Every structure is written in C-alpha cells, then in structure tokens.
Image (cartoon, rainbow over all chains, first blue to last red; front, side, top):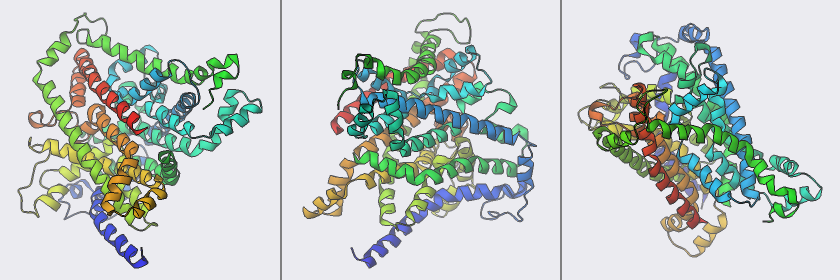
Length: 278
Length: 294
C-alpha cells in the first residue's frame, strides 16, 4: 500500500472515530469542569454553561480537607482492599492455573468446569448469605471481610491455565533436572510470565475498585468505607453536598484506575495478543 | 506434555498442593454462601431462625408477574447489548487498525475510559446524558432531528433502550480493546496466504479474521451475558435500584436488590437460584464452543 493511500485511510478512520470519541469524552469533560461550578451554574442547560464562569478550587479543597467524607481514609481503604484483593487473586489463580496446565490428576476436568462456573455465577448473586457468613466469621465491618471473599476468581484461573500452557516444557524440565522441588520450578517460571501476572493483577484491581454491593453490606463504620460507598453518600440528596464537591470526588475516583491502566496498557495488550496467538 | 506424577511417588499430591489455597477460599467464600443461599430460599423471609417453607418461594415466583417481567427485560437487555456491542466493537477495532499507529494507544485508551469508571460515577455521568429536556442526548441528537425530546428515564417505551445505550457506552471501548489485541495476535502469514488466494477485504475478514477471533468474541459475549444477568452495577447505574415507570426497566438483579431491601431474603435467594439453570445452560454452550474451537 502506498504512503499516500495509507495516510488517506488514516484520516478517514479518524473522522469516523471522531463521533465515538466525542460521545465518550464529553461526559468526562463535563464532570471534571463540574467541580469548579456553583450549584446554580451546574443546573443550567449545558449549552449555556458548559464551562464554569471562574475556576474556583474551593470545592476541591473542602473535599480533600474531609469536610464531607473522610476523604483520605476512604481513599486508603479502597487502595488497601483493591491491592490486597488483586495480590491474593493473582497468587491463588496463578498457582491453580499452573496445576491445571501442567499436571494430570483425577477430578481435573470437574474442577476446571467449576472454575468456569465461577465466572458465570458472580458472588454478587449470593450477597446476602455471603454477608451473614462473613459476620459469623467475625469479619463484619473489617476490610478483610471485603478483601478475602474477593480473592476467589474463575476468570483468573482460566486465564492463568492458558498462560502456563504456553511455557515451553523444556524450561520446566531443565529446572527439574537441577533437582528443584516443584514449587521452586513454579517460582522460576514466574519471571517468564510476569506481563500476564501484571495484567491480571490490574484487571482484578479495577474490578475490586468498582465493587459496591459487598462493601455496602460488610462495612458499616464511616472510617472503614471504600470510595464507591463514600460517593453514594455524597450523591445522597439528603446530605445536601454541593454539586461541585460531588464532581470533584467523582473525578478523583476515576483517576487511580485510569492511571493504572495507562501505565500497564502496553504490557496488557501484548500479553493478550501473545496468548490469543497460540 | 510429560505428566509430573511419573517422576516421584510423592508427586501425585503436587497438583493439589498448588490447588489447595484456591480450593480453600473457594469453599469458604463461594460454596458455603451458595449452600446458605439455597437454604435461605427454602425458609420464610427474614434472617435468623426462619420457618421451613419448602418450595413455596419458587411457586410464588412462577405466578409473580414482576418476576416474569424482570426475566423478559433481562433477556432483551442482554441480547440487545451483545448484538449491538460486538459488531460495533469489531468495526471500531478495524478503524483503530486503519488509523495512525502512533495515535492508536491514545485513541484506544480514550474509548475504554468508561470501563475504568466506577459504576456510581457512571450514574452521575448518565444523569447528564439522559436528563429530561436538558440532557445531552436530547440536546444534541433528538431535538436537532426535530423529534420531541424523550424523557429517557421516565417514559416506559424508552427506559430499556436507555439501559442498553448505557451498556453500549460503557463496554464497547473495552471490548474493542480485546478485539484489537486479538487482531494483533493473528499471524501475518494467514493474511499473506489469503492475499495469494486473492479475494476481497470482506472475504479476508470473513475467512481469516473472524475465525481467529473466535476465542475473544466468546469471552466478550460471556462477559456481557454475565454483566447483563447478574451484576448489580449496570442496572443500578441508571435507575438507582428501581424498576422505572411500569417496571419497564426492571432487571432480575434489580428485583433481587428490591427484595433484599425489604428483608425478603428468602424470595431474593430464590430469584438468584432460579437463574442458575440459565447459567448452567450458558456454561454447557460455552464448553461446547470451546471444544469446537480447539
């Protein structure tokens, strides 16, 4: 294909992508600009007051100083819960995936089907019995009560099974001949698959960051709340939080996951492409 | 593949050593609550020592018009989202591949921003899009085309379309990303072979790209079905737990949530459990397709 044709194709596709990009980005822009607006400005028709009259940071400082919700505590809780959940899920699923990919044993098929079933039956469906069970375990109003149930994932197991299937057998044999115990073998393989570990960790972190229903049931005290719960409180009409504060909190809730994805984007895509190429 | 259990006699237990942590947490936080859910569905509503009622909740559901509405809405909503999102994402992935190489990561990232946004924030964004007369959708599309402004969240004829629009907006970019990754994984040789056999671009797409993308498309479809039927967030985003006017936007998850809010835990569990056969059906379909792909 000549350069000229390629350029023309590129410009054409950009033009076609334009409306979609606009549809996606416009609401985000509106949200970010919203944090500078007063309530009256906020409720005017969009065409009239899309941009704020002046950029006043008062809403942001009020939020950060914790006037409406204990912002930093909430952010910390969300980070702890999501990070713990992601690390736990990666560890458990990588080990299970290694077993499924590299061994033959009785009951393997059945267990694998169970792992796939996990994807289809998310635990939100059993939120109430899960909640009462977590209470019985003495984990109510504890971050562990949210974190620990979140480490079981069918998607992770299926993903890592696929990942470990692609590690060349010679590599494992070499480690075994050196007399390494099977767990040592597993550990030596890990650096080979680290893009996959990172990718899955990121996805799980994002899912945990978004989780609303289970934290809502388990966490009761104000200082234990995670971000989605704090947001729900800010949005609640009876709290009379200024719209600008709500928009500031919403914007800050998006930034961590967006930044994480932006950082891992490339690794994630190449890891996916590699996996699908086999 | 050489099986490791032929090496040493003790190694027979090695796979279970690797599976143990996963199985432990699976039992603790999945199997036990599931059994608890089944038990709850067989007892009268309320927590604690409730009376055993057998299958009464299930019998009540069979005659419950709202349950049937919720099932039908969920079905339409899920089907519509798959039917709209998959072709749209395929098309967008093609556009991204045709656009400039340097811009591609930025464009992809911008498109999947909604998938990175917490559902509760999405609710706020949607208020702006769907809000009465002043909403973006009415101001930018409906009124310029000289239609009457639609009250998206109140008019029963439009609530379900609004819900579908919400999922499409939320997930299309994310799915585009997966499809794009899949496309980049297709070995170049295949296309070169196809080019030798001539054929149009459309034929290349149909005979090379699509079959190679089957695992990705399968994943995308499964994700959307699970999200449509059993995840709380999608339905909660727009209507905040209500079914909308005349229950036009009542989904199964919303219904479960409503029952829970009034402490009708028995009924809520029965609804959840009644979805299991459906999921098992989807699972067997999935395994069947997987075998055909392999």
